Image (cartoon, rainbow, N blue to C red; front, side):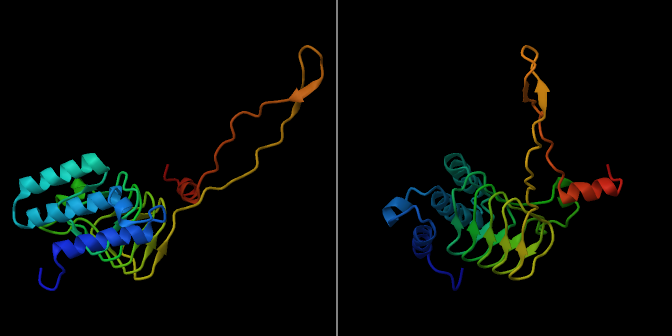
Amino acid sequence: MPGQPGLLRTLIEDLDVVVARDPSLGSRWEALGHTGLSAVWAHRVAHRLYRRRLRTAARIVARVARRRTGVEIHPGTVLGRRVFIDHGASVVIGQTAVVGDDVTIYQQVTLGAVGWWTDNHRPPGARRHPVVGDGVILGANATVLGPVTIGDRALIGAMATVTEDLPPGARVYAARSVVRPAPALRPVPDAETGAGRPADPGPVPAPASDAVRMLASAGSW
């Protein structure tokens, strides 16, 4: 594309950003074995084949990359420069997704569509997947669904789910677990000696999240 760097320069930028953002790596040589880097590099090739309408070849490259890295990126996805996929396990990015420059993606992130029951009603060629702005951070197991737009430098925390547009600089966090102390053990008489021994209180029920309590109180169950 006009104004875009060549493939070689883009690949070198990808390599350098892995070294810069992964503290476990000490050199470019170590970074060459990074799973996320392999996935991004494979996609750079697959996407160019896809744009040249070599769809079968593009899908083969994407399928091999998925088997080798655990990262599934559709060949039609547009990836910006210096995209860093840390760990890479179970990352899924859909066909019409657009990922900006300097984006960080952790493991198990999904940039997907809402579902065929919705997408089948969209006009042909309509966007079904998210647009992610520059400098966005997507935490582990974050999920962004539908043709939403994530503003530049937004942060989506681990386990968070986003289905609406976010402005630049937004912060989204998932509900946190509530930790409560276990109940005190009640002494019960021992069958043989009659002495007291601690009783097993049984499993401690997990507290319901705020969202679950709200649904229950609204009579939605």
